[in-house]
Length: 386
Length: 238
Image (cartoon, rainbow over all chains, first blue to last red; front, side, top):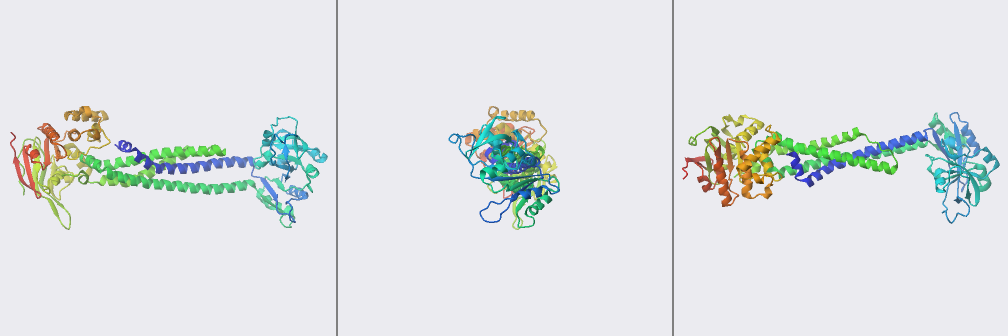
């Protein structure tokens, strides 16, 4: 009887299911996206390592100067007790890069980052080379025009592994000696050209081999080291640098994301409650519309309890269907977002089932009032005797 | 005190003993006042009276859809007021069948589904329910229309489905409230004939009506006025 009562008015049934569907879908999506994001973040943190510190030079002395960290400071940082590796870099500007001479017309010139770097960047960042080698002592001391390129740039230029290639920087030819793998921490490096500080001074007019950024690896007391670095760099003078742990930033970002997700969960919960109110309202109207049916069933010998159970069962079916569909929709949203953002989808089946059950609970509670109302209808009132 | 009806053959199915039904508290309305009567198996009874005479109240009390303010209603000897709602519902379903002027068929069920509704919650399998419901439909001549919904049936056919629903539980009495009131004369005659065909030594038929022709087709006529039984007479049918 309950199922026929629902199927006889399909549009009404679909409408009252919307509340539980939207509520469960919102909550499942919020939780699923959060968990998938956390999973991605956890993997990213593990890949980055939570012991990497990034130091940026802050405003230097005098106007019009890009802030730098004096080269001697790099050594001081390296001598801190818990520091195991430190490398300085400095990005240069206004350099046009093409894969080979004469290709300006074929390849669109685009602003490729050209970065002067210390020699141990791969080990500090814990990023391997895809092919070839990184810059070395000989390159630095001899001033040889060699370069290492990022992986995306290698793909852009069609670089083949082991192929002897040159690239042209503002008309100067550089031999490509290696390709650096993806740098998770600094995705811009994937399209960069790396040269020695010696070449940066000789060819690009740097005053001194002073980096503007340091990458520091400190497996122990990382945050303490991050606090010490600015003091070591500036030697007590005006701040010459600021240091941060990128994974802390990511963690902080995840906290913000968590707050947004909690908000979404609250909205989902609100949608469930509103959906429950909708169920109660529509079913109450249904009781009035079906008062004749209720009256005749009472006359046929159905008790108040039987009538109440039928309407409660209709609410239960709505809750079950709404919960299942909502869980499915929510899972679909999580899958879509994970695909779009490159996450691995993380979704708990137990969690899905749990929220579907919550939908059932909300629907049953919402059905209590109309089912009680139906049971209390007096057949004489509805059968219009006489 | 109103006189009880003349004794008929068969078991007493329904009995009212000094029954009154009073509505309202500040201003009392005595819809029925100290009525006693019996309906026995095998009787064909009509209850007549003008509007406001208490016919509907009588029907509601006879069908234990309502309980008296004073007095006792017995169904097959059982005091209905002493039962719980579930017990009273069960008793009603077993002993009494109802036919109403407005048919009151459930619109989204077929004719068969409507008749089966009377057989729900009785421990019958779906096959048993279906079989008994089909028998009842065939008894009223609608076996071939079992899969039609009420909207696909004429008024007379819908009332016949309602009659099938009333008899499928093998009740001791069928109570009918103006069963021909919504029908044209031809269908009204057909339905009336079906009621006569349904009367058996084990079953009573009781029709509440203001139609004197319908009332005259019964064998016993109870006349009501202002909540009292003013006449209870045996009719001789030619």
